Amino acid sequence: MRYVFVSYNYTPEFSDPQAWFVRTLGYTGLMDQLSKRHEVINVKQINYEGIVNHNNIAYHFVNFSKKKLHFNFGLNLYVKSLNPDIVIFHGLHQPVQLIQLGLMLGKHTPIIVQNHAEKPFRGGIKKTLQKLADKYADAYLFASHDMGLEWVTAGNLKSADKIHEVMEVSSVFFPTDRSEAESPMSAKGAPVFLWVGRLNDNKDPLNVVRAFLTFAQSYPKAKLFMIYHTEELLPKIKELISASPNKGAIELIGKVPHADLLYWYNRADFIISGSHYEGSGTAICEAMSCGCVPLVTDILSFRMITNNGECGMLYEPGNEAALLEVLMQTSQINVAEKRKLSIEYYKQNLSFEAIAERIEGIAASLV
Image (cartoon, rainbow, N blue to C red; front, side, top):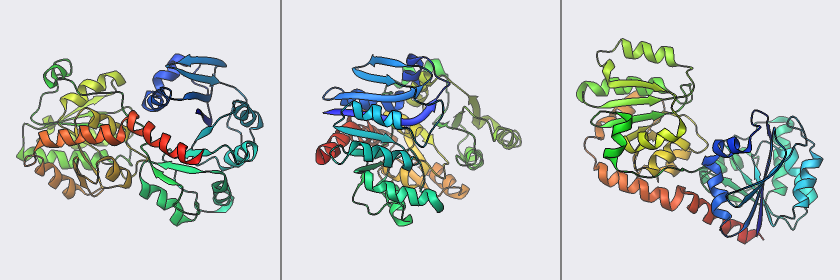
């Protein structure tokens, strides 16, 4: 079967295909798996033109427009010329492009639409277009089935029949010997907690910091390391830490090379998130692939990614007392058992192999 992946976004900051491959490792592993049994073509617009074969995938770098266009006849015609058996269409916020592509391909080429954390348009012409575009989608992939149901409830999708629960991204990391992981990172603590994410309001690091500083009063050997690549709330975080008698309990690491996260995830006992909304949860998925136990907010995507909390623990977003209670409970749970559950659930549901298998099943039902 020939799979054609297509995105309508133009990414001009990338002019080197190799850099693009590195940038998209969290997603292209899916195509790597599919390419073991199928022909896979990925059509993408960056600041480069040409066909590059990488890991048995044919990357077609095209340049039909220097910006996102609603009427991209050239790109749609190019996709059709590839004679796909199935098309994976990136994003639910391009309804006009989906309508045009559907009309051009006809009824005999199924289109699977991948959600990338988009929320349904609330009204106006955009919502109307999403409702019209639904006719041309044969299936939708959401990290959580309940996230797809929100689109149905909002009226943007007609029914739940096309919705499939499939993780959006996965991990290139794996479990290593924890003693080996400790040395290069020097992450001392008993236990070690890890934060990986932006320091913005949605991620809510302030709630996490407040709860952890209180937790450290009872568990002075515990340590939280915070890795981040944006610093929106960093000044407020520093204020909280400097004013606390337990300031040594939190260490602000900042940005690290993505490859180094392998050691951090394997050294940490727990991964913490304070997110109010996530389309999937890349850092949590990566951490679980290394056996890190998730302590995350009770949101739709994290319910799926933790098997409703079985692999770790869930708490109400923004609730400092709820997070503190979860932190206190970490001393009473069987961490080794939770680590095992995290790794096994990752392999069966969140890995590239699992994602590819689910997409193959969906595609087979449509062709």
